Amino acid sequence: MKPTHIEHLGIAVTSLEETMPFFEFLTGSKCYNIEVVEDQKVKTAFFKVGEVKIELLEPTCPESTIAKFIEKNGGKGGIHHVAFNVENVAEALKEAEAAGIRLIDLQPRKGAENLMIGFLHPKNTCGVLTELCEQPK
Ligand code: ZN
Image (tube, rainbow, N blue to C red; front, side, top):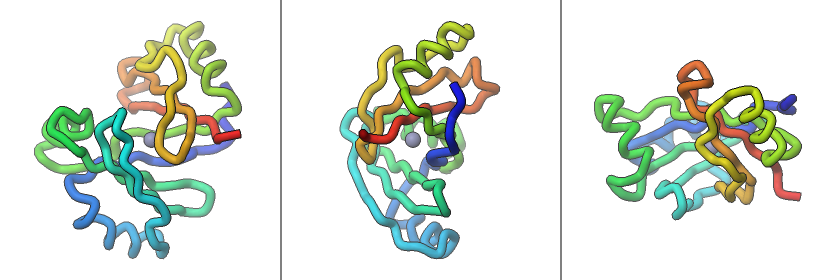
């Protein structure tokens, strides 16, 4: 699989508006992109820390997996997933499947920031929801 780097950390938040000032302070930078990902029922806000991004995820409706994550977490946000950058998501997913890792996404799909993404199942990744991403070509 050989990821090149951690692409981003996904952090679930109850409100972008309330949490963005802290992340602006923490990263010493302004949020550079806010984007709704209809598919995942989330509104995202991105910050940069060197090459790594912080992706804040706010649920857009109660059916959002992020809303369910927050509910399970006692109504609070927290680290939701770790995303690794790979050259080719489709191939990386196949490799993971061949290694016996359960996939959430059998095929790559489009995520925020025009990345092609695919999730591995946390049951097989030490409880850490793991996303693979490929940069737009
Ligand atoms: Zn992500």
